[in-house]
Image (cartoon, rainbow, N blue to C red):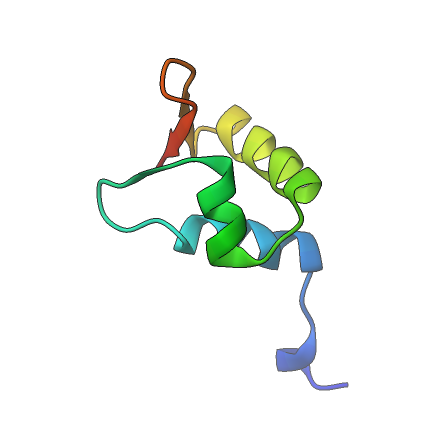
Length: 67
C-alpha cells in the first residue's frame, strides 16, 4: 500500500462535513446529509465532535450549524 492510499475514514468524513459549508453559510443537519451523503447518525456524531472541538457552532434557535 502506498503512503498516499492511507487515510482515517472518520477524519475524511469530518473534513467532508466541513467542506460542505460555503462561506458564512448556516446549515441544518438535513442539508449536511444532502451535501455529504453521510448517514444522519454519523453526522450527529461528527457535528457533535466538531462542535466540542470548536470547528462548528450550533445555533439551537435555528437548529443550524456554522463554521
